[in-house]
Length: 332
Image 1 (tube, rainbow, N blue to C red):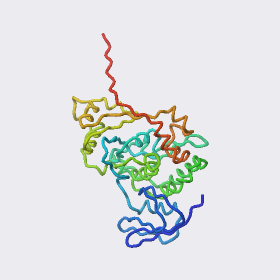
Image 2: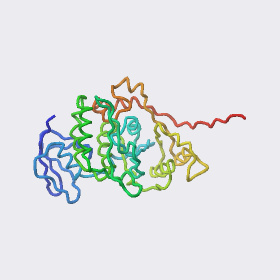
Image 3: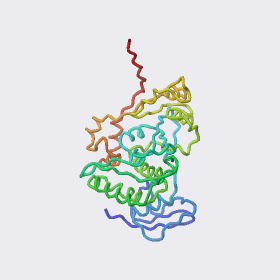
Image 4: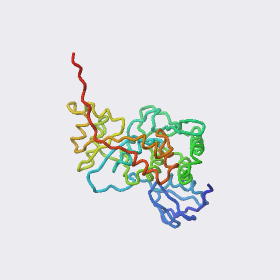
């Protein structure tokens, strides 16, 4: 696909775009038309030369308006709230949970873990499965995901983008999103979490357009607790109760709380006014609806199915009440 060229300039601190047609700008959740404007970061100046769409999107991602809340909180009760660590090209079961939530907390202030989906993802290509791994800078102490920086000593961005194109270029809707992804790979992100969020916004705009995503690093709550204690503390920010939505790996919720030894994590969460639900992907129904592998990154589902991807995901998602399994005691 040959990108259209357009110019970007600044007028009284705002960016003005001039180009043919429309440009969907996922990072601010709006469609920009010729002559529209967007607030710039302090001191940012637009380039004076003509830019391709991908180049302009890269510039916007680097210098454009940043947002910490994508969408607007709704007043309707009860809310369904969930969360997860940032994920590099998030996988399909994760977006089942995102799409089923009213509010989703991106836990970007948790500790970074090597060889986790925070900085790697499985990609199915014509020549077999490949792993995309973002190299990160070493640090003397344990870093949060937000504080961890990608390492640009090698050109991994070009390699990742070429592998993505090779894997998805024949899919029907890949060209619809190619400019945005190419733009993401043109930016040298100073934070792994920022890179993950740029990719996240593209997927949530299609798969979970009604979900509000929040970064937990911007929320003020007691983060000293572990696992369910931290979840319960964050849920306290949302007055009026509702539902906490857990994923498939939720057995830890039946463990005893570190801060409340006489309660399980489920009981601590329930004490905050939130019932616990469990989210799962109906793999059989999903396979009947799309040729996308269950283990694929969510971007493959969107590149293959386009606007139908959200309905496929929604119809394949199953919510159920979390049931605590009783401990089995053998008679001696």
